[in-house]
Length: 90
Image (cartoon, rainbow, N blue to C red; front, side):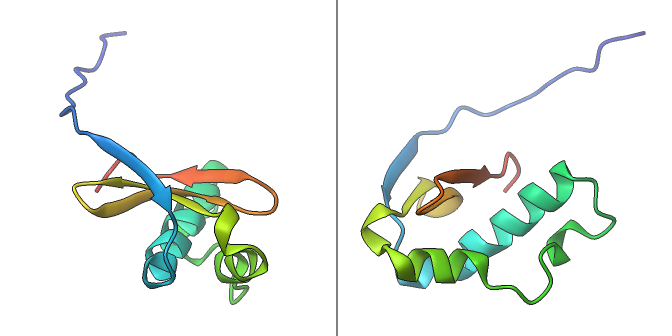
């Protein structure tokens, strides 16, 4: 089986507090990451109307972190559970 050529661009990742204005993006990443992992046909709709990221953030905003590349949120954790979600595509 031929190997596929992988291409990537090195980017500087920063980690800092997850801010309230970034919750929608963190929610989108969470749904796609876990929906894809679990093989759902439409990963962006995983968890339906549940507001998992926002309610976890509200429980303890100081425990929530975001990974950013060039100012764009590309991953986050979900306190208080500590589950981590992220994306490899922007």
